[in-house]
Amino acid sequence: MVSQAEPGWVRKRGDHATERFGRRVVPERRGEGPVKMWHVRMGLAAVVSASAAVASAAEANKVAIVDQQAIVERSAVGKKDLESLKEFSASRQKILASDENEIRDLEKELQLLPASTTEAVKTQKQEKFRAKYEAFQKRVQQFQQEIQNRQKELQDSYSKKIGDIAAELAQKQGYVAVIDKGNEAFLRIAVYAAPAIDLTDQVVKEMDRRYK
Image (cartoon, rainbow, N blue to C red):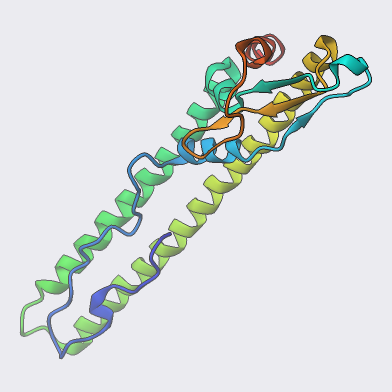
């Protein structure tokens, strides 16, 4: 969450010195980022149901699994889209870093004002700093929303692509349902599954064939 607190100098301490703008406005936790967030979203993807019409009574409990995260990471189109998302996020971070440096320069300029500086000049520079800071905070929120929207678009797109392919494979092979294997870092849905019922490799192969 991006802090919305105002910089310390806004809360005046007498007529002169300001508090440092000494914290990152856009913190990033280790291991997080758009791709990591995408993994979490994929872990929340809905269960893919296949038609039971092709299954005999003796096969009523025949269920397969897929690893949706692995499919996105290993398929050619998935790699391409994840890299695109990563580059998009990096471009936004670069812009924010530039803005933050400018804000730090403005803060330093305020701190180094000579004692002879008039109140009018001080106020003018403080207002310039405040305006730049507020614009920066709005841009942070804007970029976060843009990234979240792209993540949601990818999630919806791949849930449908994987779901469609998994359903087709299930119908051909007599499975009554296909469930997501899950993610150990978030939620593992299938505690154990025999390799023979794992359709992940087949889905990756079909993704590469269908979405070149």
